Amino acid sequence: MFINMTKKRNPGLIQAAVKLHQDGVIPANTYVIDLDSLEDNVRKLSQTAKEHGLNLYYMSKQIGRSGFVGQAVEQNGIERAVAVDIDEAFELKKQDCKIGNIGHIVQPSKSQWEEVLTKLNPEVVTLFSVEKGKQLSTAAEKLGVVQDVILRVIKPSDMVYPGQFGGFLINQLEDSLEELLKLKGIKVIGITSFPVLQINSEKSDFEFTSNMETIKLSRKILEDKGITVIHVNAPSATSCHTIPMLKEYGVTHGEPGHALTGTTPLHAYKEDLPEVPAMIYVSEISHMDDNYAYTIAGGFYPRSNMENALYGSNETEILEQHTKVDCVSPENIDYYGCLKREKNMKVADTVIYAFRTQVFVTRAHVAFVRKVNSIQPELVYFQRRGN
Image (cartoon, rainbow, N blue to C red; front, side):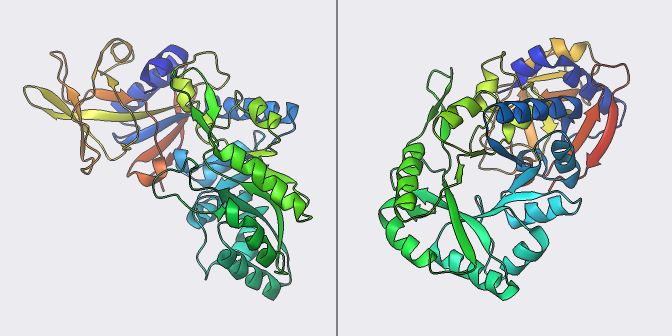
């Protein structure tokens, strides 16, 4: 999906990866992230957000959710994380990263609220239900604190990814607020929904989903109940390009994830976006038959939209030799990838892919590198079997 754009905008990353792999510094089944470019992308996002008065939480699950990368992001301008689940939050906290939002997609379990409040100290908690609000409030009252919360709001016709439905139905929101406002351990300060943006059919820009209208309607319901809404969170594809769009709709918070590595869907089609592609996946040819070359896997993702890959054994070859990705089957475990065999392929050739991924659901390693455009690129951090 991103191989052509990465080759065009950040060829040094591809060349650095083949050198590190062929030199034995990194193994196959490794995501390689250009840390210099990632940090530059973060600075651009932070500056754009400041110019438009938007607050940002960074999402780390796409790139391995480690405290190492969390610190790198925080030191370059985005100071708090959104944790997709409590396990991500704990991984980040191991290196003192700050948690901005928890409960965004996966709600903590009923026994974990005390840990959320005492060990994670989030700025806000996203709630999906009155029941979760009661659990959190009970834990907060016990500790003598009041936790700010935002409500995930939804209507049945909104866009929701499979397995992610949940939230306060807008036609029941007024009644739910009656219950939530009685709870002494929480304070409702805002709303959220997901996804709020999607790429259009022409692949030329992002457009708002119906979820944005749900956010607007829900905000009015909250305000009619006397709630001062200071937090309107609209995640999905938050980037330098979409931040002005979000601000125009009254959004206060965004959550860049793929923008950190220049891999939102639009980055595959537009080469003038500020964020530079900064992540690729490295494999190698394990064996071949008459038709196919099989590559060591473990890091593929069902929604990756892979089409082509690069192969070769040195920095020159890798930019000149490409082939088609074949036999993609999300129904099976990705022990191997499959490429159309070319005559000049060799066992142990490096293979470079670049696609939309979620590292935390794979079995892949993550390598953070610097100086990708130098003679000697540097591996600065290796995360084995990325969490």
